[in-house]
Image (cartoon, rainbow, N blue to C red; front, side):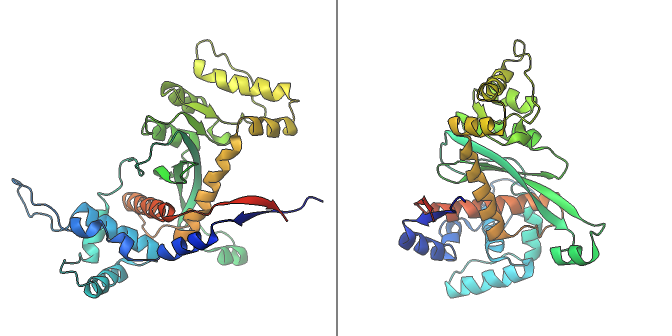
Length: 316
């Protein structure tokens, strides 16, 4: 019987301090406090904006981190500003809600880093629907609505480079194809599971000269790569797996040789995302959900930059 592997953290003392620091309210105001008010445009008809987009985004990040309803968010900000002796005004919860529709609507790079590797994955989050206990006791209801979160993660820094929200019917490869166009120019390799084994995704990566490591799906066959050169890498993977034996063990060995297991780091990021922010959206409309995802992604990157565990696998 194989012994269970455990991950032993070597920098626990420092990492423990970083975990405590994640709950500090000061890290969310360091930059936003100086950019809280909107700059008045020189010539613009209509009422000028009082609060900048940074102020609204800061409020959304605090809402995501501390799991607050909009009204409670306004009260939280008022009390924090009073304790910190800020003389800045606090936006009403209705204003935060309206302005959220203008934030995070387009794909934007979420990190200042220049990664060389990118890992893609997706997960589902609930919008409407019963909890697990109700489903177990009484079955699935009719109003169960889900969204899909697509993340592009740097496996070295563990930061989210891009995040995208789609409906539950959008395939992983289709969403990732749109994300590839926004990747930094420094990216050289991309990793994904079998859900990304689709030709349009390969073609987009080939156009950007990005090497991809994606396991061919079960029953995959060689394709003509003369007119479609982006399929050559996939054909090479199929030939390599067949040369190693063509069975499940051969596929496992191919994954080791190609360092495919880097992709598992995105699973850790997904777990971290859901553990910190929950597995559901508070917002009900897509445009507000995009703003919520954008704020949560930035918050997770801030927490990640504070510090990550460092250790090694142990046989226990």
